[in-house]
Image 1 (cartoon, rainbow, N blue to C red):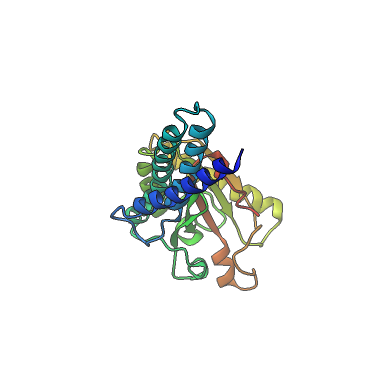
Image 2: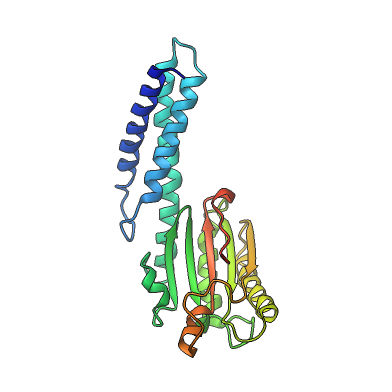
Length: 242
């Protein structure tokens, strides 16, 4: 790639930033955090520009590179916006807001937290609203809340879903592994009952990755939870147990 081509790509990256900035003006978003939209627009525009630049004849190269940048930027921004939109739709449906403050996860008064990560939306359900002690049978409140998520997912069949269960450290690791796996599967079963077509992966994390030290009863209650991850695709998946 020569110097002229590098200059062109730099220009299209700038154009992508402008495009993604335009995309963030979409109304109705809760939380004013549109980093997913910005990043999606930038990456899409640069990719589109590169394809137009490298796969065109010299006669049409400039035109096709610009078209590739515009088209790729719009598509990338749309992917990011869809993720932002899902976060806000989920939060609104569950009667809360998008909250990326890490302190909210250790607030004992918060039983339900919706946040956004790099390529995913996370819904944390605190254990006390989800399951009776040592049980994998969901409460009626939990079934209602999870069903709300399922209703939304019917509009996003390409979203990849991950569900992870967590316990405190009472009992053996193996016992808690089975319990956390069963709880994650119970949530998945409730989503399936809503008729969704999404790919769902479940995982039991036992007492791995505690939010706080398991030193008091109140701390243990914070660590008992189920997390639902809504990924934009398989490439965005993380290991929630680590």
